[in-house]
Image (cartoon, rainbow, N blue to C red; front, side, top):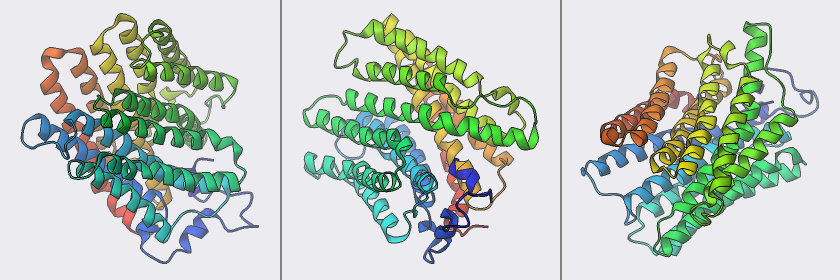
Length: 415
């Protein structure tokens, strides 16, 4: 069961035999911020997502120089794909894995140490001009390595073989980051590492999002809207995930091996169509009354949109379409899904009602609008600057809004 619903007091088969994850969390008597992985990582992840894009907008307008001595675009891409994303992934998985395995969550000083490793990577990248490139790379990639060790220990000790693909994706994200740094050290543009990082994150959304979206939808429909329910995970889902993963891999490899362009384009188009069918089986049209549920479907909808735009761009050799697809994934699927998961998990794990107030709906709409504007900026070159600026403002409003609304919940004990 996904973590945000387990904390609402639902019964656990092992409740009478061993302490629950929530009971273990409550045993921590230090600062509430260190009582579970989602608390510090959602807070710093949300704040950093907004900060990176705010700095990016200031760099684009000439109001400030890019941090470090990297090319501005490289800094922007790295800090979103390998700074913001891993923080949210860590917050989610450090919360979910204890529920999956029945083992102790990481709390207290070990959790603070993991946060410190993440912060060290951010500082190293910001000071890239003052430090040797290899040292920057080592500090920056230390976080996914450390996170993989933490998660791997729990998954293997708990014999939770079902979630080994999740661990594999975290390891691959670290490899993509290492590739990014290797390209920079060789004096090239880090396109391959960036694309591989985005592809792995989209794969994680199809894998984990494919569990939580229908699960949370089913739970809500059973309580509020009895009737038809989402189709449970079956072989069709596994086929769609595998086919999509192959398309994403070929898309990520295109800068290195342009030969399979047609195959990549066709696989991406097919992946987009199959993901649309997959999502339709989750009955998104039945979730209208609750934003905390429909936002998950809206965010997932950017996955097939990204596949279709990227596939069309590859087949037509259209750079604008390719950039539209990339940002459909990056801003829409990744940005909005992380925001949706952070808000839901925060509310569920801090004792707040699993419903989205109007202010939360506003941050959802801000990031959704940012995604549409960023896609439009790639498709309408003549309007790219104002559209990109508006997209950046929407993104910052959404994630700064999350910090303002949910920061107090994250730093206080459970209500």
